[in-house]
Length: 273
DNA sequence: TAATTACCCTGGGGGC
DNA sequence: TGCCCCCAGGGTAATT
Image (tube, rainbow, N blue to C red; front, side, top):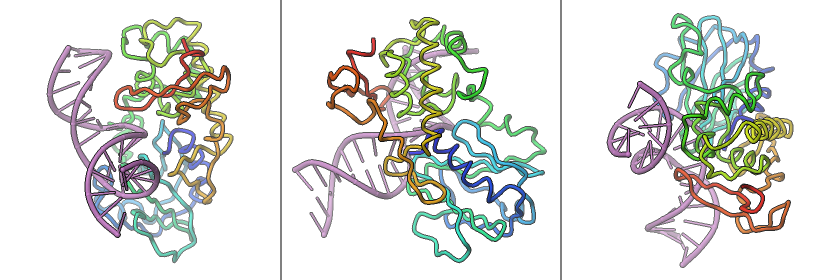
């Protein structure tokens, strides 16, 4: 399932095929994903040129002069760049013909989204879905102090506070478990009970885990296929995620699985206090 | 008012 | 073969 590294790997994969190229056609094969597709998107995009690509959290941004196409991959979505004329398959919901190729979005579980933000409505950062997002974890502003300051009023478990996305974005279920393991913090610890030193370890762990996943091409589990059709392989380096009962790679104690906020959490009770 | 919790959407995969 | 249940991200509504 795409998390921040997969979205960033996807962005880097599609960017050279989109930037500076002009849209020649847009096609939808479904009424919508999480939300209905934007009305008249073909009229909005055809004839316009992609100026740049970007990313905010797990939202992929395709910038035009007159607005931004916002794409979220949900939990099973992926983008591919294809030559024209390839027959769409069952879950291929959205095509954008551009520069002699086709950007195709596939999303079996349809939790993803394709949205349009018009430049007349101001910066895309003001979009309803983007304006409440926390800081980017790979940006300079994000560090242990940032985590410490923004968790003073938060009594919920640190794992769930990370997932909420209002303090730091892009730390999904997999990377939250992995980062907490590396920082040696028990995922059930109330966020406001963690001090500056441990938050510094956590911030560093989050940066390292995400950067390593991007470097390695993103995780795959079952659903992620990179833009060139190759799978990433970060899952080979998991310390705890999906390793219930297997020995901790540090101390050999069995990895535990608990449920927090209806999500599975994996941790080592011996290493994480 | 803000934080937290519960629920919901979908469909692949595993277990029986 | 077919049925049922679980799981996932994250928005929204309900509750604390």
